[in-house]
Length: 356
Image 1 (tube, rainbow, N blue to C red):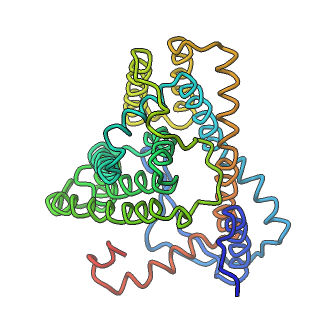
Image 2: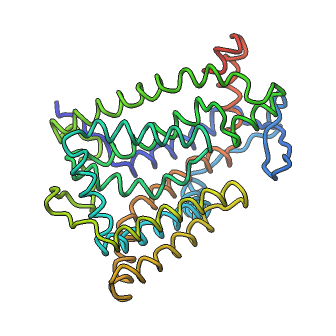
């Protein structure tokens, strides 16, 4: 009997779409009533779930049409990812990204566990205190390149990011954009319980570090254990000696990158910026990189296109993944699934329900 091989991600996502379509034939269809909050967001009203009077069935044709509709629905995310890939490719053409990776390798090359812990801890702190989330996206490609250089894999880079983000949001002590709003909706004292969440913050960071490092160590010892070994990674696989020195141009570009992240973080919070504005901000940073990076506009244009092309697979997966939720929404079972999963929690204490 042959060894089981994990199917391609696109195959898995399409299979999930088929399963979602079949579920619309079986799961009772229903919906919650919604109300619009002051910020314009629609939220469900607890206790208002009701079944639809006339059941409808999705067809395989509707499954197929959901795919292009999903791409249209997720176009802001898709194009932002491609823009980001293009801009970072331009920055890499200046040698800045490679110089930064080389410097980090000099410091952490023999201690990848320290890098993993620091990234998780810093991301968790930022998410916990100021609610950063989308701001991490630009760091992922850099972390992927760094992990590849340290004989790890792209999943390790994603694990660092997701662990830090998830821990920071999940047990935030003072996050004003999720915790405070949720406590206002629940009509409980603002920031109540912060002492407990602060006390368990570091233990959760250590748990997240343990999980990511356990996987990373396994991959470092045996690359065939990588969950993404069959996926192409165009970011290369160099040794520290292959990277350029960090010069004044590189430092200026890195400083402007940090400034761009700061501007983006501020405007997301204060002015409601989202992916269109984020894309524009990184395009502006890319133009600055061309000005100070000592590369021609033709080279920058070619690198931008190459960088965007490298993330085409990611963009396609994002679009198809959106198709799953479209199927559930069109089949009117998304709220039914949420209602069904929440029912068992109504029979346990509030503490257990919160964890569930």
